Length: 236
Image (cartoon, rainbow, N blue to C red; front, top):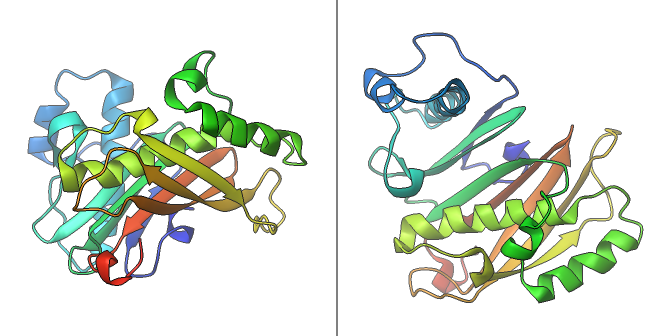
């Protein structure tokens, strides 16, 4: 599903599997997970397995993917990328930095946010905008969770470039649904785009980021991408 949200020069890999065979992790990765509970280890391992497949798509050999502050994946030199995992879906997206400045992906279960979370991660203006959408023929779309996932993709795009943490309320998102769900008859399928106006700005990135979202088989996927030449109108 992630591959439908990103251009062809991004190598994507995804799985619905919750576990991977023993021996999937490199020794350095095993060391990071030595004291982790089973769920954390499975999330980490399945995402790394996807990363290795995405590396192969770029013609790269498999290498360990360790992490830095706040879990930022540490990619091989010259590579940018993003990982995501939720129940029933894991994915990786990688590109060469000569083609892509930064990108972020996220996956979430297509279900309402837990009680009280919506008010913590959204702005009043965002709640006003998604309220009417939910009432005007959007059916069972859980717009609060789609918005949350889109913000996660925005933040994953922002942080590797700026090194500055972005709060949920420092990006103002507007969601758009496309008229053709493009789900191939899949019940509950939907897709669209979003724009994110950054309230915390940095000269390394445009003040508005654009992304895409999709829902299939109970999972929301979102993605944001910024090109190196965005200042010259190269797109974001």
